[in-house]
Length: 580
Ligand code: ATP
Ligand code: MG
Image (cartoon, rainbow, N blue to C red):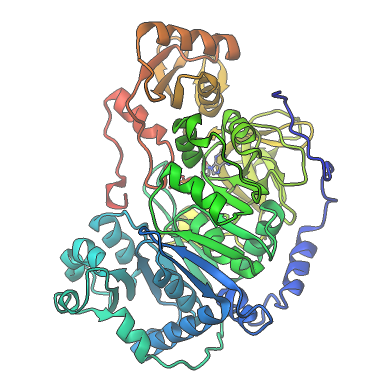
């Protein structure tokens, strides 16, 4: 039976409040690091375990598209990353320079990321499906000096633009085209295998501290041109603490994070956090495929699964037949991030996989999970949960020229703001110091997302500041309307926008993608309008519904409401072309 709250049997109470600074100091002590002493992400993620009884434990299990698998232990990972760090030194790369990676989820990517961190370079991942221009724009903006890529990606995406990238000194190419022929045809590059084999195997002792820059992640570009957010090595404290608390990840677990390492989730939780905890991670090189994913979950005996609403919606769309008779006895915890998780998806988890899906909230800028539904707390489908320990959140109202005003009254919509000081807070927007400064006021980071907090302290996502609809005096969050449309059995996905309206200011319009084999006709449109009116009331329900084949998504899979709106109004689709 569907209820407002899914109770947790183990411990329904909240953790006791802990002073944030004291909490992070405790995490640092646990990892045997200090605020200003040596601190390096790769040392904590890899070398620490390689020097322990865990050395031969599998760190990563790589699954390839052809059905092959390769296990890499912590010991092997330490040796490979030592070589890559030594190679960077031998090439004359300097600490703090930017190393880009552009390839699929292959072992070399993981060695390059962790080796570069060990060396003290700044790592920036490029999403594998980017075309030449987004690749060029990002490398140029960060003045990247090293790129690790594959032969096929280099040929298609980098070679035509290489002359336009004078900062790019060294390109290491993983041969995916088959041997010498490929290498000969790639002038001005180094072969990954040869270079790594020739590099010194001497163990590298990193000399970074918490404040040294480590990671450069570009945002998804949902609201405009992607921004480059910089994080320091100290961010790893957040990765470690939140994976344990919000994902319930334990050292003996098999963990699968489906996010691509080209995005912050794939880096923070797909690479770093499970290693620091000492778990085993599954890495699948193949693209999304519903049937394949179900096999991986079962056959690899995944215990903790971290995915995204877009993937869950695709699994839901695949239909119930695919799940018939399947069991996942090893699966203990499922979490999702990146977009609002419709209550319908939480219940789908319960009914199809036997477990609810736990939504959590964070951003590229926050570097790690900030608000979460956890294994221990009662779960309200549709809510994002509560701040994790060490994070202090507020709901605020911004008035131009005034300090943000904190809203104490429950269920009042305001901007989500976080008290500064958590370790993975971003340290800058690349090349945009003014924009960075504008994100902060009175010791608060202003997230740009609107939320409400209920009387129990649970946070509910309302929408981005830019997406919220103001209609006849009501503030309408698109997520609420989309979630209600998703309840209808015919609907696979919905995107909701505000359209200028002479009387109401804005009127609500919904774009709806239907499930397979459902016929889009006038009867269904009327049925959906009536369903929404019944559930939301006439003031909030859409006035218009349009059927769509698909909705525009960012490369990371998020619905782009700004494009739906621009198309509806016949406006230009934005100036983000250079980075998208
Ligand atoms: P850009 O900043 O370039 O417009 P983006 O904000 O989508 O892109 P990310 O940092 O990848 O880039 O995404 C963070 C945003 O995603 C959050 O600010 C929020 O709007 C949305 N988001 C993430 N998790 C959740 C969630 N659990 N519920 C609702 N929204 C979420
Ligand atoms: Mg953003």
